[in-house]
Length: 394
Image (cartoon, rainbow, N blue to C red):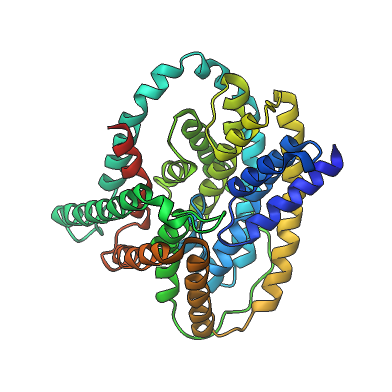
């Protein structure tokens, strides 16, 4: 069993470090070749948990987000420019591991929720509408700009939210066009265009500053809020972990709080989707769906042991790997690095999602840029997930 846990964790770390690869992709492959694996279900669980800890590395150092880390791109990029890349990564990794611990007692709540599943499902559209309204209304003008300025920013936020939602609706409605590769997903061009590429395009010249190697521990309140958000989202059918990061980051004004809440929501959602499978037989993620296809429903005790061991290994490995990478990138030219990564993103999008993915990527970039130019929160671009889900229910 321990060997399987280590192997699954290693694969999850590798997936997390590789832009464009998601733990759901690996889970689907394991289902296809289950006969070749011993304890395939354990392998999938370990890779899913480890992935949520390691995926902050490409988000921070390359600006390549996935659904769970999209909101962390800009805060973590700023920390890189301040010489705090390792702090950003350690902050995220520790937040993810703490979210595992915080989420353990919530199993019993998942059992209770499973008994009232229909009521929870019926509340999904109302929850999404409330989150959307709160997101837009949270925009505020500077102190001396006046009340009308706040409403102007809310209008801008609404336009960005709507525009990103429409492109998301088109993307998911034609997602089959992006599946030119087994790992292809419309989320790659969509989120990279909205969040990753705009950060690279707005990077200033100069060199990457010397990076201080110091561990940053997360704020407990931000981590707890993220873990709770991940739990809430895991209850609702059709709502992805990306929405958990939206809820978790509402009200966070500090970059460190953003990163901590996002990371905690990411890992908490992955764990609690397993809870919902065990407690109520409901699948809330590609990982849970893969386990159900394997007819492997883990017990509460198995989830605890597997997740905690895998989380500890992934935490240590992420810190060691990121330390090595960061020591090699100092004093690189920011302009050269930005251009190189941007070209890499184009190739990555084309390889995984083809021409349709490239079209999405370049269409999403102006929307992502407009958030900064209009001085509203980038979180409004998460309309690309919220609006398609609302259309699905309404």
